[in-house]
Image 1 (cartoon, rainbow, N blue to C red):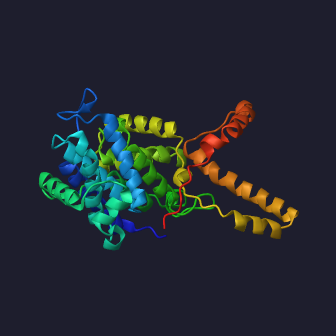
Image 2 (cartoon, rainbow, N blue to C red):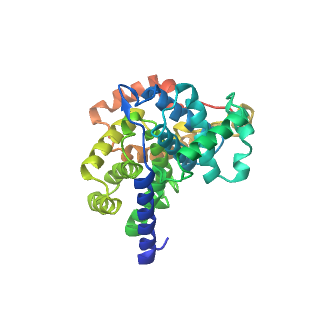
Image 3 (cartoon, rainbow, N blue to C red):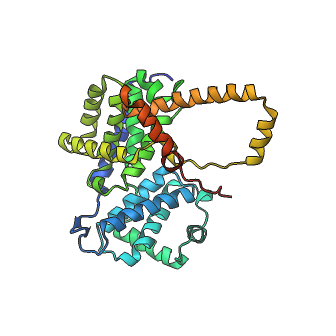
Amino acid sequence: MKNPGAAESRRLDGLLEAALVREARLWKVPVFKNGCIQGADISSSQHQEMILWLGEMNRLFRFCPETFALGVCVLNRLLSTVKAQTKYLKCIAFTSLVLAAKINEEDEVIGSVKGLVVQSGCNFSTAEILRMERIILDKLHWDLYTATPIDFVHIFHAMLVSSHPHLIPSIGLGSGKRPPGLQVALWTRQVQHCMACHQLWQFKGSTLALAIITLELEALTPDWFSMLTDLLKKAQVDSAEFIHCKEVVDEYLHSLEFSLTTNAVYIFNSTQIQEEERAQSPTRHLRESGRDQEDSDEYYDGFRNLYNEEATPGAEGSNRDDSFEQEDISSCPPLHPAVN
């Protein structure tokens, strides 16, 4: 990959400036007082639960992450504008996601509103969704497309690759230890998780995205501070607010024990596995198992380095015993049936 040069840098600066203008004009989140949205009876836990549900619906419909992020932004803007009742919250959230999909997704991906309602398992009628669409559009003045945290992740990533080509093996095209596009996918997943954290709702999308990227840069390069200073200046982010956001993000992501593969869907075909095992000799099986284990260890070393997690020499044995005892609980992600 060639260095995009000065022209590309100017283009990225223009994209960032336009995104910041949209964010400054349209970004709004509900104000909570005594555990509820001010002027409404929707609690912070209900709000958080609804954002997590939107994430589930987004994956069920196979929408892109940008659609989820925009749907959450539309939901937050509406809840900060009107006094909504709890009984309408799910309908508002669902309609916000549908409107975001109409902006970001192709028509063949969306299908019909009726089909989405049936697929979601909700009992809304098509007429209710259409009425809610009109209410949201009227209240938000038909201006839905705000800059989301995921938009800023892509812009900041492109700016880093443009200004610092030596980082491309780490955050751009991949290397022997990191598959292509791994970092952007990881940052996107982290943003989606953070958007459901009520402690982080107070921060703008640009600040949240920059905090997540900075945590990665600290582990990747000793020159991270100069890169951060440049991005902070271009993003016009307040330093004190950024530091606070970064601390909350770091604590929250570590509490999740975050990794890229936690949401993978596995389909197990026992017949095929048994046939392959009978066809292989014991020697070959042991040799391939050893090689796969080495590849796996090498791959997950990258995630340990991502958060600078290094076990102390004296505690290595005890930690290994604990991990085996809890393997059935924490290491295997929940399995879901394949969607036809």
